[in-house]
Image (tube, rainbow, N blue to C red; front, side, top):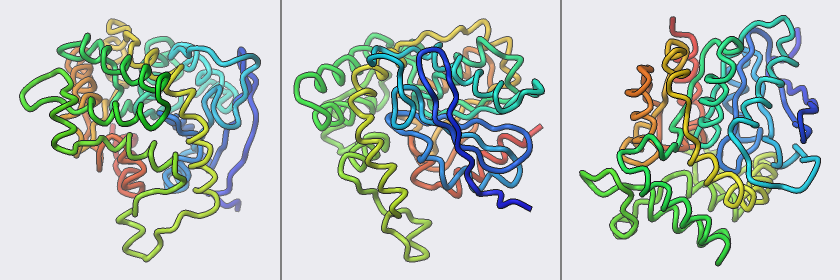
Length: 317
């Protein structure tokens, strides 16, 4: 019997890129898409937990880490990334069996595009906090925020961009629009920003689950993942953040496929912009909502608890 957590790596040629992917376990296919500046390494712990029931596939998105583009990097499209996912599913599930799909943050936007374009290839889609500004009560405020983040990056670099994001993603109490000044006064920095800062320094905050066992120092593999994530940040801030947050989902197609869609929100981030957008999506298309542990990046804050919740959501009838 093979070790269900053993990693099988491969390269897949897609239109304009070559995707590095990793597979664990056997069974129905589950594809887990990394968001932000992350790559396949962000899911190491969760994939190992879920590999007892699913064949779990993770990958580096095109232009990130080990997934090289055929040409120079340019603005990315959720539709192109969604088509990459379908090619990956076809390669790993050649008998045509539909796959489950999980995406968080920017990759949750890709999950929406994949479900709208290829519903027959997907059995269940879990989209955790897609930051789609078109679904906010005040879309222009959301667009202005992410444009300001990109401009801060162009002008002053990664740290300035992340500070701008930290100040802007939390809304004023009782308001739909982001409130950068008030959020900064209250010290509200969304967890996704904390992750980027940790990636930039090669560090991570102590994980309560690991603290209980006395294991807090990152392994060499985790340190390598952080370094790759840091190297991906310029691509994310310049070429992914605005095109993905500005994506307008096909609500008609998503409503038709709503029985296969679960919208995830973080227990600790429901007042923040991405969760507000996510719950707006669920109302518009009639999809179910599932609360997950932690905040916007609960999957790195509480990987074991997040994996258990995802298992329940995927296995629900």
